[in-house]
Length: 311
Image (cartoon, rainbow, N blue to C red; front, side, top):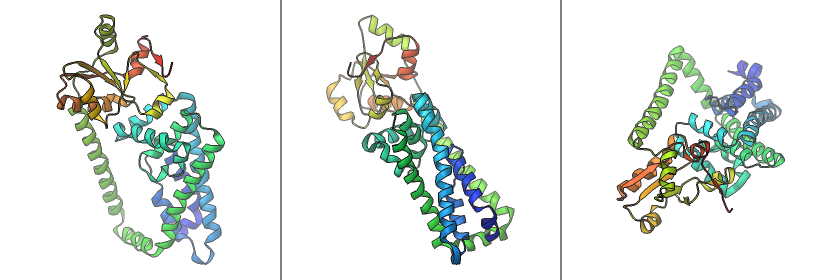
């Protein structure tokens, strides 16, 4: 291990962190721990600072790509990233709420929260955060994250060495076991996601059907359940839509009749959040609740009018 760290430590960290920042499913924290454990105690601080600087540089390079993608393409970039997530129904909501509360400062802790780091960077671009602020807080977050990994390696160097020795004795069998466990975890998450989607699948209403109801003078109640941060990115709504939070159903239950027609749209792939809320409302006694297929994007693409929030 010592020879590996001496020859390729900084290069390995740079490649691994850059790949992770660009969105590839390659965890970099184990590499940082391994490199930290392999640093020689008698001459540690200068190499440690060098590896830390390399890690921060790689993170900033990869994150800057997503930052500018979010700034240029906005919603499309965020939607694409959430489609890659195994928790696509929560990845946007959670990030929007964190960003809405803390702003670009959330980047200083985003790398420590699974799912948040993937979407917070392009969201900062979509929200038109200033580049110096982005670099400041994203660089701080990258430094804290890398320092944690390297520090764990330094503190637990002896234990890491023991684990490496044990794995080397197992040979290729250890790699096979790790690969099988990782594949099993991803497969379980995918199966759970597919099960949820199937349970929420059912009737949807298409934009032409909703528009026909409006023209016929029978407009349903339309709920916009996008998080506030996303409304800042796309500040338009379907005319007459009411903002709602799927976490606060009591107010909806007390305000709207349960025999009326309700249409819900969100900003998530496959209308997962809208379908989940529709299922909850049906359980509460609402008779006719449908997610809008494609959300406001499909409505707008069909050529129907939208209103700017606040006029």
